[in-house]
Length: 194
Ligand code: VGL
Ligand code: ZN
Image 1: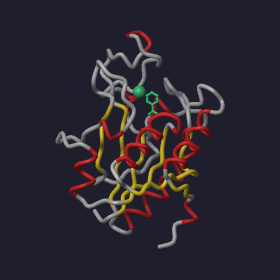
Image 2 (image 1 turned 45 degrees about the vertical axis):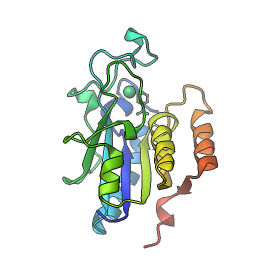
Image 3 (image 1 turned 180 degrees about the horizontal axis):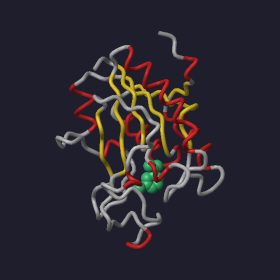
C-alpha cells in the first residue's frame, strides 16, 4: 500500500434492496464504488472493505435490547458483500460488530482475519489519507470517518458513493454536515486529479 487507501464501508446484501436493513437505493452506489476501486487498484493503492459481522445474539439487535432488526449475521447470505461490488482479491476485509455485548458502528472497532485493528493496518502501511464510501452514511460511514479524523488521518468522504438509513429523513444530511465540521473533505469521482 501507498499513503492513500480506499475504505468501503458495509456494502453487504442486508443493506441493499431486498435485505433485512435495506438502505433505499443502496445498490445504486455500487457502480460508483467500482470506479473508485478501479482507480485505486490501477495505482497500486490499498483497498479495504469493512463488513458488519454480527453474532446471532447481540445487544445491537431489537430482540436483545438494541434498536435494529436482525441483519448481517456472520456467515449468512445477508452478511455477504453485495455481489456486484468488484472487490479485488487483495482487499483487506475488516469485520466489526462482533462483540455480543456492545453496539459498535465504526470500522476502527473491527479487525482483519489476523486480528489486526484497522488503526494498526493503516499505520503499518503508512496510510495518511483515507477515502471513504459505502453504507450507511448516518451510522457506520459517519462513525468510521470521525474515528479516522481522531487518528489524525486526512479523510475524503466520497459523497457520490454513500447512502444512509435515514431513520429520520434528515439523518444523512446532518451526518455529512457534522463530518465536514469535524474536518472531512467532500469529494466526487470527477474531483480526483491524478
Ligand atoms: C449499520 C445500522 C446497524 C451500518 C450497521 O453499517 O451503517 N447501520 N448496523
Ligand atoms: Zn449492524
